[in-house]
Picture 1: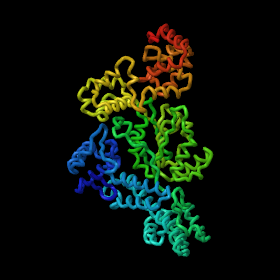
Picture 2: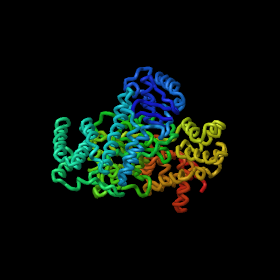
Picture 3: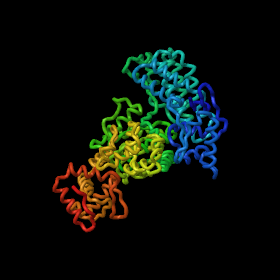
Picture 4: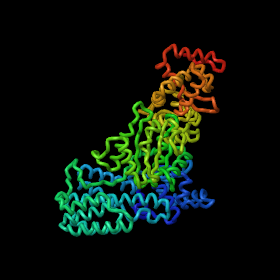
Length: 619
């Protein structure tokens, strides 16, 4: 089965082409396709279909459109699913022409970087051959055309530029004049086409014509756009005036060589893949998507997703980033800042990676942090990029990574609440509600297994306390053990002392994740977390905690607030705190490993004898 948006909307079921005659249904299908595999919130679909002016009956009408679309497109209609908060279409990457186009573009760009112009040209030709006309040409949606169609059109022009570059590299300049004159007439703002036309003319012995072209483009840029020619155009003009012999020769094609005039303009797209079984978080996803797609701005949009370890911060951020792709036609940058590790990524190192992704040559990357930040912000000026900074340690780490142009968007994940990040929109991830947890397990482990014993499924969810990481581990273990029932795994989780041992699958490990969060704490806060876990109570008052720790109430409250900021305790009314799910058993284990016997014994004694404390746990 094939789905196409590179031209009129198209579905090919085996050898049969299926049309979608109703205009609103075409918009609906297109909106689902550009976010294939992702739940598209109902609110966003309503905005797209009715161009932000929906009727009062929009939700009901949308359900009718979905029903009619499913019936009207045959077997392809089975791919459309109703999910909590929206709809999705299950389409594999190779079934979607826009994805195949981008994949071929990236392969061609990589071949070009390796000095393989013939292979690059073949890949670029294959990519361009997927186009049947303007993208989404029969889809009447300003939002989709403004975002997705414009992004794809820009990408198509990028591929055309790169394909023409391969022709110049292989000495085919004499056959390019007609195509390049058409492209410069249709897209006078794309200076690369003018550079290629001047180069082709010069290599064909037509130096005066090449110089005339420069005067032509200079006049067009001044009259229509009010700007002077860019650096590359000016450089080629000077080289032609100087009769530079190097400009006569096609660029070198040996592996590892990069021609001096070659500039690959493929927009970066560094987002990790979206989770195919992402479940729940409908409100958070819709909130983030609307925020990331914000239109008129005076400063870059900035959103921060924070939450306890294992609550799915990265999954939510990546899911929302994919949903917001259409609004960021110039690409997406992604960096793991390793803020929860002992060796967070230095901003200078992250910036180097970003600059390379944006096309800066390795030897042109500045040495200093301030210089890298300045160049990074200059490159992002005038573009509309999404920058995802995952697992930030603190505000100081991310400030040099923030763009300045209002057209850009930044999405940050962090365990701590970055309250000192001015203008940030905060989103908090917590444990999944029971309904979402059941839905996730059903999707990830199989509905038949979870439906066969709903009581065991409920027990498993309770044992995991709704923590998304723990639930994913359980789903992975059930998938790896087809002979196990949900009851088998639930019994293992609830057996005495086995919970943390069972919540482990491959590199997914609840104990390890929570221990890492402890290790990233200030030493005094880490000690407080360990010793307070020894008291046999989930509820902590400041005076009780101060007594257990042997600290003043003021100092104790400061430590407790640090633990709340790290999402390892939850705050209630002023002066009242609670242990977060699954944290206490890990903290107790760490206390046995880290704290000396006198320190532990003293904390237990104080907990047992404080008037407001409950009985202490056995050592």
